[in-house]
Length: 253
Image (cartoon, rainbow, N blue to C red; front, side):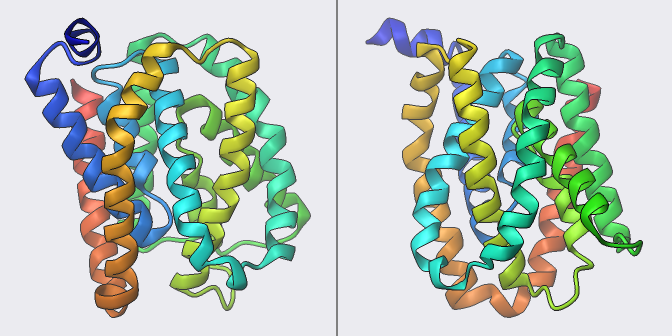
């Protein structure tokens, strides 16, 4: 058992950083509906190979999704989900192909770059103001699917695209992303499993970090519902500054 622990976490620093990141990422994801993977992926990439990062991040987020779904079920906009999901599923095989050709350094810089760009764009207040239709929905969906299987971070394309959707409140935003990623993560996991990319060591990380992630998700959901819903804008900006700092740190390491 001790040998397995040392294999998983060769240093106390690695264990502490991954635990703290897991707690903050789970809380952030539950509060906003996205952001967990954007925080986990760049930090985990400092310690784990690319495929391990993708598998661990997707499994953590997928498990926490089912923790959030019961409270959202009656409010899910199914027509919107069925309109957006198919194109995202098409993008997942493309992302899987890209992942197979990435080394650790390139993977880390791609993940960090995505996090930096999204954080900066959202901090400036920019959002998509162009036309909407099946073509635009498909582009956002395919890109999101690709990023899900490349790095476990499929949120950025839809974050920028859906922020400007008419009548789309913060609550709707959170519900949409939670349900949408349930579909894309399940598909990505199935593909990784069929490719033989899932390994026992990855489940060791998930088994260690998942209880913390679920507790943090529960905390984030409670804070959103009971205490911080009216301060969503302030919390969002703090989260974005945190993501920006993490992205820059990961990019330059």
